[in-house]
Image (cartoon, rainbow, N blue to C red):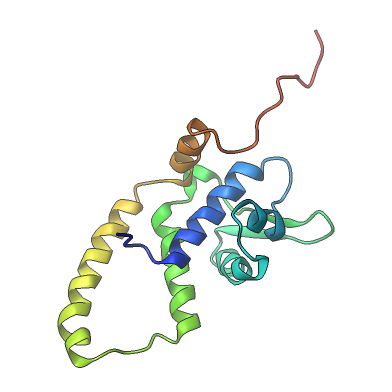
Length: 149
């Protein structure tokens, strides 16, 4: 069972991908989508929401794309999830449910969501980056140095 909705998981995946592959140049949405087998249009609205929220920054031009707006250690999973949840709610109009849902179930879900987000606020993108590198993801650094001895 997955508690995080798909948009939140996609936003986290996108931010982590940019952290892993954006060291030397911005990450294009096309390259990001290709690595994760997604249509590029599918990610674009989420990427733009993350730019507006200050998680990513957009770089224009022929070799443009997305970069992290802050250091990995200063970006937290909870923040990225909140951006995705707000973007998804805005896209879906925040439809109301039945009175039972609104008055009984929704407060219980909100309490659980707040507890989960508090935990996610303790996990930085740098923590996820380290896990991803340990699992073999990301660009491989060249064994060649930038200088000769």
